[in-house]
Image (cartoon, rainbow, N blue to C red; front, side, top):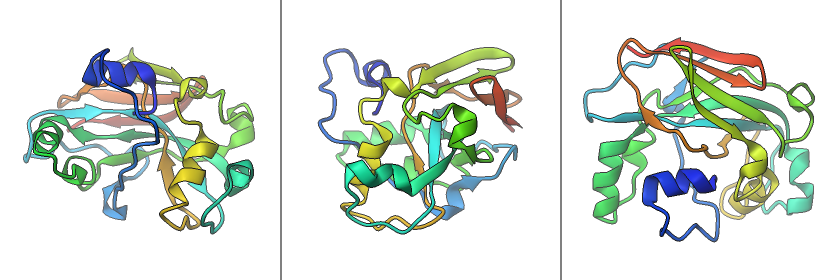
Length: 200
């Protein structure tokens, strides 16, 4: 819930936006390597794509001050947080944790990483989008984040020690939707294609 319009599309205009970043974890088994197909699991009926800018942590850090957070990353990528939306709704309605709907195997598609300088140099001004079968479904810019990248890093590091290679998915803009077998997903940072894979 890091882009206002996405919060509105999921929860309605009257939903109170969070005062702090909303954090959940994915295990390393959730990683879907570059351009590997995503196979729709059979434990739920509605799997959604959520396209996000991802930062890779490059040094060990704990209780990081926001003004120093920029020192903990130098590369960015793009990722898709696949979500079992019907399962998530069921879990949330019962007040239960919703990791099962987010952290399942291969639920975290990830691109290769590029130096931040190649993405324009400003972590809070990165344009990105997702095309499905040649049609743009999501388009966002990191300037529209409710919580900025450095703020997220500072917040998370109060609770978890960040280690080299940790990946932080930074939230998705509006336009999330269901994936279907046979679709082709292509994700971009600016005009640079970062991902190109199939739904099976």
